[in-house]
Length: 423
Image (cartoon, rainbow, N blue to C red):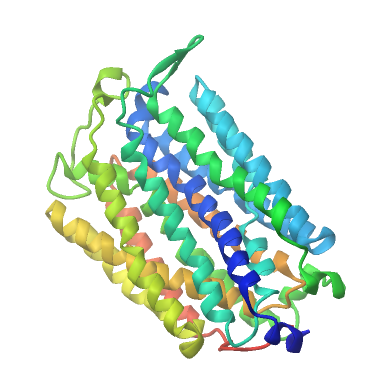
């Protein structure tokens, strides 16, 4: 199998990269769209800070979907699972745009998250087509599409401030942020269609048997599983900070630091959200675009250094988060936020490569399990930020910094997997 894959690299693999990459981008769009609509939707849905924390956490219930779809992918095949999960995720994500009340919007996002979460399967599926000597760079290139989705979501400033997108739909006041929610469901739906029409089943899945999930915590896999579990949790907690970036940047418009004691307009008065302040969206776009250098770097050097070495960038991420807390001006905060964004993406790309290479490819549910652990951390981070952002936002920011530091140190315990053969 390895010999055949080594000799078969060509145009198909670049098409595979685009299709799988677009699906990966859909994950970023689905996750991040909520953070960009909060400054406006908080008025129409009458959201408190705790409500915002629950809403941003809801999409991370992909934790359940991640393991479920990984298990089904090991049983039924990668392609079938990807088509179904992406389609359902897009449908419920789009339906959320019509919800007139917060609890219904939350429920639909909850279903979208719990039914979605097929991204670990994408990485397993993709890696099974890749030759050993190119796999690190190609998986890094696949991970780069998450940045593309991040940038697409950040283009909210082209949609949400628009007045032309405001109309009445029966009893529903269809504001521009609702149109943005609809647009954010398009990548998932089109990804499902592309997999259905263009992509074959993984040949490695078709030729090999099944591996029980419990094998992750037995024998030689046990120590690496524990270490990887800790790294996923520590790195994923930062989603709490990432999802609240637009909110923190908005606070900088009114005070001297992200944690300044600022009284923002009450969400109970619709007029306070309009006209929409576009500066926050543009700054979020800049932060998203700052992923590019880190993505390029990982593509160029991943096959040379291996993923374990690049996971050490978690230490720099920890420092940059700490500096976000201590800065006193908006410009300084934006600079360190960009540094954090650019460095953390190196860690994520390295983790995607390491997580794929550490386990037998039949065990795609392993990566789904660890991604699920990461979603637990993301939910925790979002809920903690939602509860403390008004009273003591220093606690979750400093906690995120400490966990990134811990993750970087634990990553040193993982084995080197550079250019190893898939088993």
